[in-house]
Every structure is written in structure tokens, then in C-alpha cells.
Image (cartoon, helix red, strand yellow):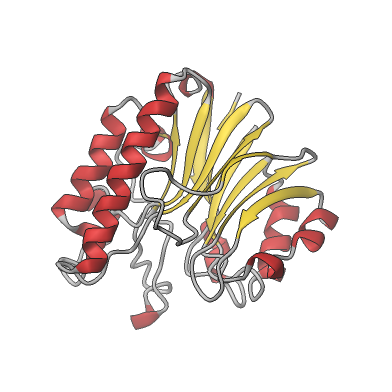
Length: 256
């Protein structure tokens, strides 16, 4: 079973990229983020024509998350992260797919720190950690996949100091990610490639894609009950170089 996460950065604009990648990569489950499309504007029919059923939570202009499943209908379980009934940003969706509980996550960016956006990022992260703990206690097979907007370590960014003040690299952001992992979640990509420079995001600015000036922001975390099935993980980095590409590339993991 192949699970992927892909920050599509506008699903309508990047639909040809998404469909071409789905056809080539043949994932079984896909978590999408940053749809940038209202609920009714999500291209569900085009995606279904490609062989994937979907659930999604759209948001006009910004955010938006979805879960796609090849040849199976996801059973929607949540459309928001618990803990703040006033939070209306579309950043979390959860569904049962092929015997696995899957969450697509688009964690807040948080810039600029300090400030209200960074405070929201950390509060959202705290809610995610609390909810993840309850999912882990259930002993179900669970996958938490998405754009976490966190560079976990210096290995996950090209050699530079230009991002030092960014919310993605702040000690509080990194500490929150480590707190999540310490619950018992497995970072699939880093587990199989412990010392390798692997990126999933290359900013459009400053020629960063041609220079391979990337960051690893997109993570697939596995619960203890499913971790023993992990056999491979990687990034389809060439997709970042396609015409009209997202600034992210799809990351994936394979479970036996």
C-alpha cells in the first residue's frame, strides 16, 4: 500500500499536474493540502475519473485539505481538529481508508514570529498533539500525513542562515514536532533515510529549485501498530520541476 502527501498549492490550477502524477505514481491513498478552493469548487469528478474517490474540506482562497483513495471510498470521520470550536480554518480532515485511519494535515505557517500567527501555530500544534495521543491510545492503525510547516532538524534544510528567523525553524516549532514523535509516532522518511539530505519544498523565490535549496516540511507519521509494515519511503522530487508545479513535491511511504 502506497500512501502519499502532496501540498498541491491550488488544486484547480495544478489539476493537470495532480492527474499526471496520480497516473504515474499510482498511490493508494493521497493526502492533499492547500487546496485554495471553496468546498463546491473541488474537482472531485475529474479526480474520480482518474480512479480516486475523495473527501475534502475546502476553503475559499486559502488552506483546504483532502483525502483521496484509489478504488475505494474514504469514510469521513472528522472535518476539523478538536479543541477550538471557533477555529474555522480548513486544516484537518480524517477518514477511514482500507482499514487505516488517515488524517490530512495542513499545520499553520506561523509567520512572522513572535505574533498572533505564531501563537496560533503553536496552539494548533498543541491541539494536534492532544488529538494524536487519543488516536494512539485507540491502538488503531493511524497515519498522520501532511504539510507540518516544520523543518525538524538542520538536516532537513539546505545550508543557509536565511531562514533562521522563520516560524518553520523556531525552537518552539521543532520542540512541538518532537513532542508529537515522542508519543510513539514514526517519521517514515527519516526512519528509512536517517542521514540523507531530503527535501519536499523549494520556494519559488531566489532560484531555489535549480539550486536545490530545499526544506523538508511534508511528513508521513505512522502509529506503532502500523510502523512494522513500513518498507520504503521517498519523495517524487522531479514533480517540482514540472510545468506549473506546486512549490512542494509529493512525499510517500509504502506499507507491506
